[in-house]
Length: 322
DNA sequence: CAGGAGGAATGAC
DNA sequence: GTCATTCCTCCTG
Image (cartoon, rainbow, N blue to C red; front, side, top):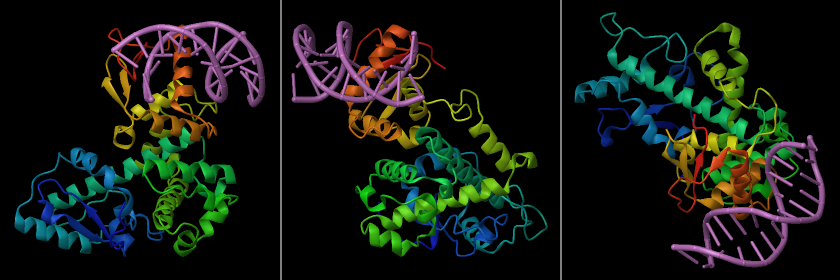
């Protein structure tokens, strides 16, 4: 992953040509997300961490209206200047005629969707790793899990050893330079990811569920949704873990994906990677696909997973699809 | 050779 | 007892 100009957030806007990818100055986070005036650089690192997520972002924003060239310019200007007063895409800023601009609605829809997806991703990672969303509460073991996970998810060099014996509170005190000193190759990226986690935890604390606002809804839906394993504090089962990965195709689609979601048929595209993720989750560094597949085969008797009628390598089927 | 099937021992909970 | 891990043998394409 490259480390581009970190003072701009690049987003692809539907209807806007690639040459007009919109750079939003985010040195003024209050303008980007005015509900979070002191939010610690929440979006200043998105360009470093969302490379893989552009596709879904574009898909998710297909609802908006294509913009003309003039509109794009206006859009860019107003994205920088508009003093929006509400938070997280719910407040709408009046246009020149006192009307809410369509472009601003689109912009804020995109912002809200990005925020929603980031929060969901964090909640998913918490479920999969069995860690709390707030990094300040992490033990050194949690820190190791998080570092390993982030390395694997974003294909970073292996630097977990550089963060051994650090607790979450220690990690949160470290500057980007501290991260770079410990991990010259990807310390800045890890620091960026940690910033997002810290900000999400900050927001979660700020937007309590009883507020019944947008964030509260997002977090409640995701944290305490149906079939959620994190609320029950039960150890996650392999089949649940696999299902969680399958439910996040934009993060894990390269290592596991549905072949037929209705029938519950899925394929493990990268067996070593899935095994590694499972090993991280279970604190089993020696986990490999041989062992993981043995565990999957244990499910045959239990009627949880089976081989599809037409057996294929690395293809399995949930007996009871969602 | 990688993946698949399944037996058996073991350990954590 | 359940579940997962580990190690193993044998089979298949």
